[in-house]
Length: 357
Ligand code: AMP
Image 1 (tube, rainbow, N blue to C red):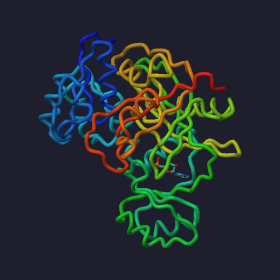
Image 2 (tube, rainbow, N blue to C red):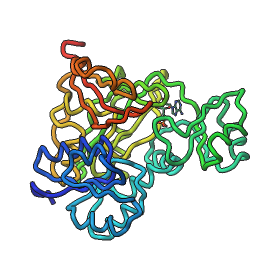
Image 3 (cartoon, rainbow, N blue to C red):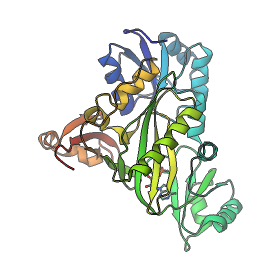
């Protein structure tokens, strides 16, 4: 069923993704309520209402559910119990508990990806130092130890090689349940941003290539410099994941492209994604609009690339650049964060590469 104009979409999470989702909803006369703990959150600044409560506050979650026609999320670490409480109150959450629980745990995620026929780097679950030693023997020496849960932007990760001291790596991750992954000698990192409508219709955006430094995305550029077959393979991997999750909304599958043609999945995000921030400028219907359309049960909008484009994140002190200079750099989006901190995503700039081959 299509939600009528004027209906209310609840958003779990209060960051910049929620802010851009709220703005996209407002374009259609849909209202948004943000549910997230904290004051003056980027999303709450532009939404119709903010419920400032913890994700474990059942009463507040029920009040939120009662005020919404449908609920979505902009942060993948929302406790699954919050989604279950909202669903128990009779309100659909799109994407739902399944996508969220798989994405929250790297072991569940790799297991699910592989069950969908999506290749990943070799990996082993690690719960003890003994596990780490045997996993390292099996897939080392070039590998990465990552916490199973709560890692983002390269946090909760230790790179290992033949000289590494496994005991100190294990201590560094505070002996948290982890996964050991083989290090992939990739040529490029790309992502597939794909929208899936309530009825299963699918719209994969053109594929961007992504440059990271210090584990944080710095720049995405579209279209990625990859052969057509590689792009097709990447899209079919993302389609299979979205179908198997019976997903509704936008998801992002992050992939490594190797020189020998292999395409391996890194992880997926059950939400709109930083590497898709160029879509509102470079396509008629951007990722935020298509996420809102899908969640509202509407048909998806066109995702064809009108121009090649690149997007630069403004991270930490980048945002201290004089405003006139930032405005000259391209189409500027700021997230309404006043407090500049190292590594904090403050905004982004999109440039359309008109006339660029
Ligand atoms: P993640 O938090 O898993 O997305 O990792 C952050 C970044 O670390 C990725 O975007 C890659 O640049 C790098 N990275 C993560 N896992 C691997 C891997 N198995 N092999 C090579 N690089 C990796």
